[in-house]
Structures are given as C-alpha cells and as structure tokens.
Image (cartoon, rainbow, N blue to C red; front, side):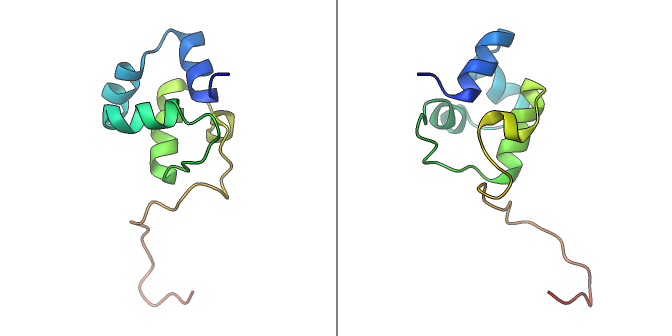
Length: 83
C-alpha cells in the first residue's frame, strides 16, 4: 500500500526527484518519507510543508497531523515574550 505522499505524487505525475528538486530537500529525505508506510518517521513541520507545497495540498493530506510533526527547531520568539 503506497504512502499518501506517493499516492498524491503519482496522481500528479511528480517523481521523488522532482519533489526533492522543487522543495530543496535531499532526495534521501524524500525517499525516506515516500517509503514510510507506517508513518514512523515524523518529519519536521518545515519538511512537511515543503512537500505539501510541491504537491499543492495541505500538510494534513500527507497523512501527518500538525500535532505529530516535529517543530522546525528555528522558531523565532519575541524579545521579552514569556512562554
């Protein structure tokens, strides 16, 4: 059974290589998520957004929820803001 990324990409005629090129992600990252049928590998939010943008779908259509993906790690905080 294909992953959602694979299903969506094939339906649009987009290859792994094209996703990598258009998103700026490495081909190995795209391949890993393309083949992760059990969704064991939760991508960073920025990665999920890049793939979703290339496929022209919301992140949730990739099979990932906003809560499950990892934060990007480069989140900006306002100076003086409290957490």
